[in-house]
Length: 272
Image 1 (cartoon, rainbow, N blue to C red):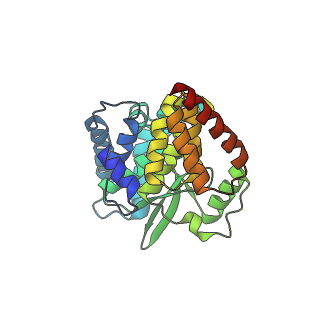
Image 2 (cartoon, rainbow, N blue to C red):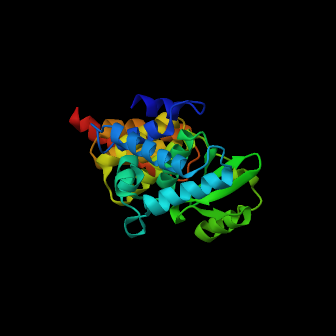
Image 3 (cartoon, helix red, strand yellow):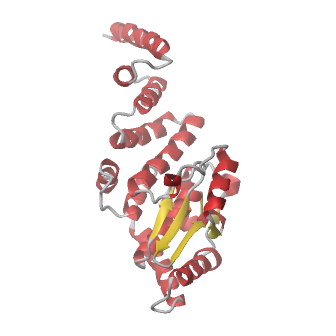
């Protein structure tokens, strides 16, 4: 996962998003061949190019991209199985043509990149969009809803309806996000699914990647420590929970974690 690790470690990394996203999928597909997925993205981009004039403007690109992606290739939301982790794996999304907001946005971004079109991710609270932005044309697009065009006000209303958060006073909410941000958010989606399903073995490598991106994140150390506990990896749990308390000395659960560490110390002493 060299490309993914490089992208997570450096906000300025030039690693292509599609390559890094496919390496996320290697969490479930360790021997994944990237070529079929990359070929599919090339094929979609070629179909969009064939539908446009050579000097098509931004509005014409969006019309062509939406037609090809959502009418010809029939990419769509997977509302019926939203929390399936496969919705976060780019190879599966390209095969099934179903996904969640961020993975469908990755498809849109990567197809646009192949055509040198300025499409960027926008990380709303509770949702993910893309933005086309160049001189003379700018639009927010929702790949989860067939490429629907949104106004600035629509974006803020959408965020509020999903989370109750008022984003209207924060203009940075609608600014383009980095590939690193997108990858971290994809990993956080997987983390939430695996915690909910108590799939600790699946969770650990996700947390390892998140901590590669955010080594000083106290909460991630706490979560990984708890995952290690569930898997009876007591030394690893002790290291992570100790690091958590070092990073968050005033944490509300400091006493609880301290008691857990005492239990681990006693248990390890008996094992020795």
